[in-house]
Image (cartoon, one colour):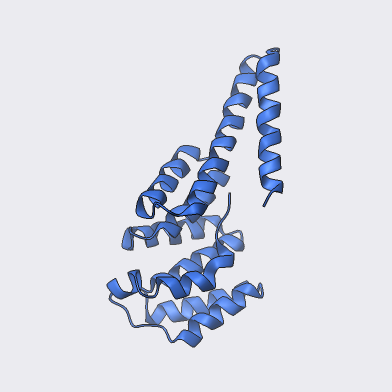
Length: 180
């Protein structure tokens, strides 16, 4: 499953006319958003996070920079902080599909599959043509199948049919990961 960090710059530009217009906030100078995005692209995550935090201290309701901040935290392996960032963003901007997607990816990585599935469905409901959410939902279903087959195999370790299905599901998962 994928977070969408590579699309940050495009998302920052695209969302400018949607949620940002609805949010009571001071618009960020384009150069500040661009600088944060540049730092992320260059993998200077600490500097990008510091810039995002400084910006958000002045404009705490800026959806774009809050989203990027969540992506940065996830990229740094700070899952709990990233989860909190995306949950807060969803609460304030429920119409945006990207935070649902990214939160779902983080929860799926923790084995919280049902919550992840529900979040991906909410992303699709918010934007029915959101391809990444569909892709992640497919990946999630494979992960859920592997999990179910593993549980069954523990209960019936000599079941050859179950073992074959588990092996096939794992192979499909590996091939899908390699296809990225």
